Length: 152
Ligand SMILES: O=c1ccn([C@H]2C[C@H](O)[C@@H](COP(=O)(O)OP(=O)(O)OP(=O)(O)O)O2)c(=O)[nH]1
Ligand SMILES: [Mg+2]
Image (cartoon, rainbow, N blue to C red; front, side):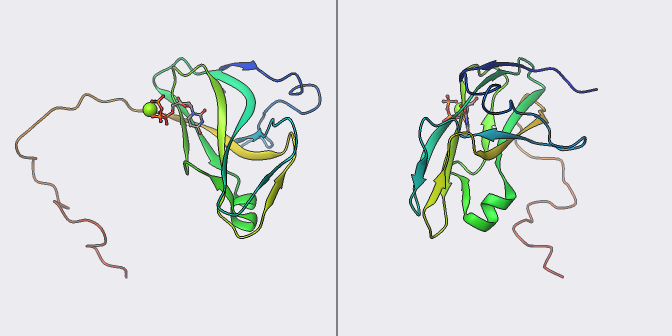
């Protein structure tokens, strides 16, 4: 059973000229977000631009968050990724959902109004209480990290 999350449509073109976000297949994890810019925009190589999605969501459950992720086709082929690498949407955020579009590639990227430029993925969240201690109970790994188990 899918959870219900409230959203507001902030752009009249969404739901009229362009479909509202939805899962493209029965088991898709992400729903695509559109660049609801007024006019086509061009992103020069290296340029980042904050773009509205025309949506606001209110998750309202501390056990849930949303992430904004790149679309793999655009990210790999064109170099259109996110200026913040991953966007994290807090459960109490009620403002407009924005996407930081970053052209990490070598050619100018043109984005038209309504283009699907990123995807929204909801994830469970564990919130914890941090308890300060002087020493940890010894684990098998200890302080080993950053490749200490080798490559092969
Ligand atoms: O790609 C993103 C990332 C964040 N947000 C919104 C939702 C999120 O809940 C809020 C704050 O994000 P974050 O905590 O990552 O940014 P911050 O720089 O720490 O801002 P703040 O001081 O408001 O927490 O901004 C977006 O709309 N798009
Ligand atoms: Mg923050």
